[in-house]
Length: 374
Ligand code: GMT
Image (cartoon, rainbow, N blue to C red; front, side):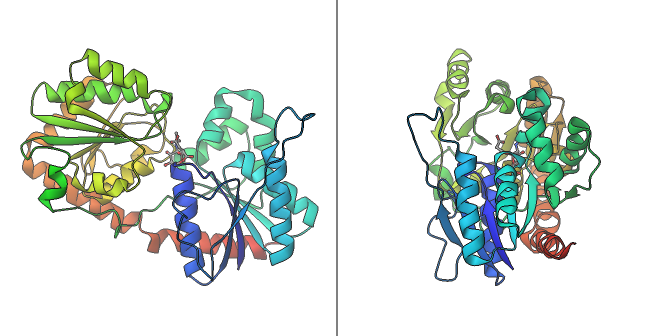
């Protein structure tokens, strides 16, 4: 198959999934062309003679234009790639702007199919913000096939847009060779003392992630046991979280490490992952932690319960219940037997329910069906 992939290049779960999937599809012998304004961050150094290939969308600034209109430029570059390489399928990660651009290119070329994968933000954003309602619904309805990363997101999409088209659920996956426990004590010593519990949070620090809750939970834990918190990533809520850590007197034990290139190193030595988001279509960062045998304490929100088994691979509490999440965290961290069994169950879930060997063939089958459909 000849496939083009459109995704966000920034460090987010959808870009990670799109890139890892594109690499695996290329390794399975298919021709893969990434099209975007920047190279996806995990694609760097991965392409080779046999692909995947990256085609940069060139921006165009003109005095008359108020904005550079990136989706038009993306549709234009995708059109060129489709015509030049005979692309049969454009895989758009996110309805807007990528499916919109792909549908445009399909109309221009009169060829190719569009498969759209919904990751969450476009749907949840539209749920709250009608500015994109019609364009997003159009992108979903006019795609040749639509997948969502969780049952929750598929249901929510139908509800928000009042549509009843088929939306296939294909969960995200994790590379369990890369995301695994690191047992070398020297690595852990770089971040924490041996007697300290090491808690970690990874996100883009948007309001939906409730990073202040992360600090609140940690402060309650740190009042009871020796502990340290690693905050990985960056975004608009980082200054508030920093200030709160100062106010609560835990700034010396809270480390804001920014965007960390090899997040698996940090996850591989951590004891507990915190994800108190108010909404999360899936929670890929939690799955990456689980793959490293790290139990998760999270909010019972969105698609998280499809990833984290309450009481088995971690604990789920209601959104905003920082006392409940702190109590759950302490329960895991104080009980070595529980901690080890949850870590093992988390790794097992990653291996048996979210492995590339299970998920990638689902995408390949969807590609085949979409290309062959009338
Ligand atoms: O969570 C974010 O803000 C980033 C966003 C993205 O585009 O990467 O994540 C979304 O897609 C991920 C991959 O499918 C999911 O794991 C995240 O849960 C989802 N984020 C939200 O739904 C808020």
